[in-house]
Image (cartoon, rainbow, N blue to C red; front, side, top):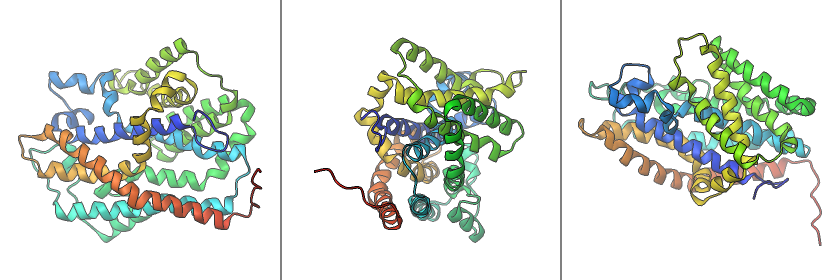
Length: 367
């Protein structure tokens, strides 16, 4: 379960599930007007400030959870390619089917919610919910289906744009990881610094692609990384959880603000390492709940946001906080059905395509 050379590192599936849960809570909290104002750096009452401007923001640090996703993607796609030769002819169609079929299905589901529950800009709703009150256009639909410029019909699709781009560039990332395998930690540092520079320069490609490179660097150095001692692991866990939320409890107008993105990404990378190399984290992430969330994570990520927005538009004005209790269970239920009817069949089809296109001879079975 910990690390099978030809399989998966199970605890990383659990980490993916926890990150998906944080994104779901993030969007549920954004539907509450006070918390939405705080997330967009507006003034909030004193009673709510501790949920926004403190390490407690960890439970709904949605953007930071997506950064963990990016590092994980870089890691889990690079590691198998480093351990065995990759059949790129089979990889590309398989990977694109694996990503695009669930995306298209999620857009169809989002459009059902979009037309059944009109999205209206109303004074009592949160700023985030009101942002979704945009008209449907064919141009926007094309941008959603191609992932070139996803609209707010299903806003989490923005991250899939970068997932697809990384998937197309994977041979380059694997080559960098292979060439710099002995100095993987240098590649990791360079990736963190480049990402921070990208945020400083407001260059999204320079900000996001190095996050995948950090995952590739960790994959290159994975065999060289020792298991983390128990006590050191607890220290690193506390430091990384504080670091990944640092922009919420440190002033961002001070001289150190350009350093904060580097701290956040380095913390995300540390969390990935702890998930696979620190026994207490592995035990937790291999538990039933994190593993089940991990199994549903992609489906949950794709379907939950249109549900949250629709429920927010349906709930009475006086009950915005009830959305957390209503939308999250509905999202989990829809994600379970979506994973059964869409994601798993897409995964099987992708594997079948890869197998049919693979030029590698079959491996003889042991007697």
